[in-house]
Amino acid sequence: MGIQFNLGNESKRREVLASGHVVPDQMRCVQCGICSYNCPIGIDVRRHAWLGESIDDSHCLTCGECVRRCPRGVLRFEKTELFMKGEK
Amino acid sequence: MTRYVILGTGVAGVAATSTLRTVEPSSEIVLVGEDQHGFYSRPGLAYYLNNEIPEKQLTIFTKDDWKKLKVRYIRGLATRLDPGKHQLEIGESGHLKYDRLLLATGSNAVPLTLPGAGLQGIVKLDDLDDTRRILSLTRHARTAVVVGGGIIAVELVEGLLARGLKVHYFLRGDRYWPNVLDEKESRLLEHRLAEDGVSLHFKTEASEVLGKRGKVSAIRTSKGEIIRCEIVAVGIGVRPRMELAINAGLTTDRGILTDESLQTSDADIFAAGDVSQVHDPLSGQSFIDTLWYPAREKGRIAALNMSGRRSIYKRKVAINVLRLAGVMTTIIGAVGSGSDDDLVSVARGSSETWQQLPNTIALESSTEINHLRLMIGEHTLVGAMVMGEQKLSIPLQDIISSKADITPIRHLLQPGAPLGQIMMDFWTNLKN
Image (cartoon, rainbow over all chains, first blue to last red; front, side, top):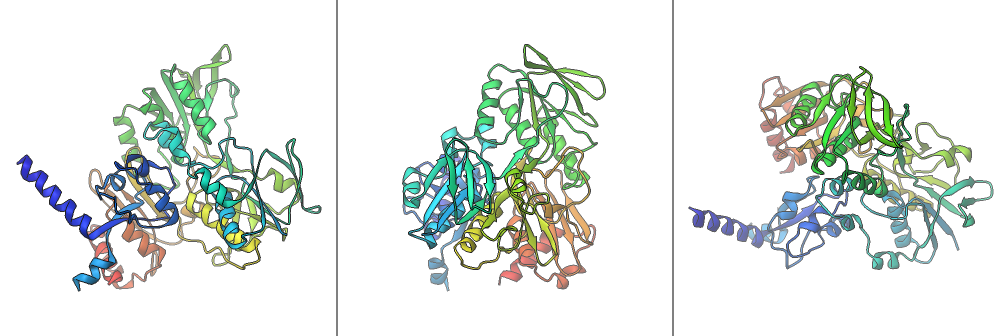
């Protein structure tokens, strides 16, 4: 069960990794920095939110830690336009 | 060369500085502020207090960011403004001339005024020094009393709890934040606080803070009860810091009055952030917001106008998303009205527009942990409160901000209807 569960998560993670990225809503962000503090690979997510830019850093694992930890609902996963065009 | 002076190192002042540098690459920009810590996330102080982040995480700009802004920084308190001479007096630094000035002096917590208010151990959560002071006190304190309403009071309650203290929370009325929340929402949050071990005292006021050797030792309530404590934390609202503007003869009301270009009654002086009370031509009224993003946006618009680039501040629907008593909560647009005995002025992190409710019908749907309330106008949704599950937070933000015509679904919005699903479907159709 545990293995299946993990495989399921891994599969989902890869799916998101391949097709989406983290997008901030500048209006909600208060620059508390919880996102950057919790990023396992040290991406300055807060900086992206200040600039209103999606996290398109190729190192992003899309692990969702920043999305989950943000106390202001600033961050969300969004499909990249590139893949959306590809799907049509 | 034009000299721009920005007074205040909060988000409004820094956003203005940044915008000015972009549009005026070679102008002189002077940033003045007395906070020794400069620019940091004020809303983030609550997360430092409750131990979610370390102090250094609050700093937003790097040394390199400041270098790029090519700004002259003067640390000091502005004590006098002379609009006739285009001059500021700053502490011991002397006079500073300006061509255009931005007042982004923010707001200050309203202090407690009762016997014993000068004792050591009475704290607020306004700036980094306040937070350090609280953390220092929590190392030896066992019990704290929190008085006040709105967001800051609950952040104080949660922060002190996280630091291992027993917390008593005094509310003057019979429920929490009544001018924004409805009764069910107040009860939901009060229940969560009680579950976390907070002792809630309704219809209770502090009448005197008692001390020993200059330090807080207990608090006497209006009912005569004495509660031993070492900390009294206060969150009864904030007041715009506008003494400079008043003494300079600028037009003020609850804040410094500006038009929609953020210009004050003096053509060369602008105001932005918590201190500004901005005219809204649509409603004919003027409002104060003590929210982060509007402050940033006002700083940007003020800077454009200061440099002669005509730009209008368009008031967006006020929104705040936060955790209240551990419950994710989104507050959008007009949701409440009336008064709040726990706040003597506007709460930090709030907007006066939240309490400007026009004729609306309120509908709600709740489960034990999730709650949704919609404020329905004639053709539009004018406000919403989302607690717990946040799936509807962004859709409702979109629907309310865009003033989407809800006429096609208005007849469906009835008591007992699946409001969440109806709004989600409406938003999906709107997007496609």
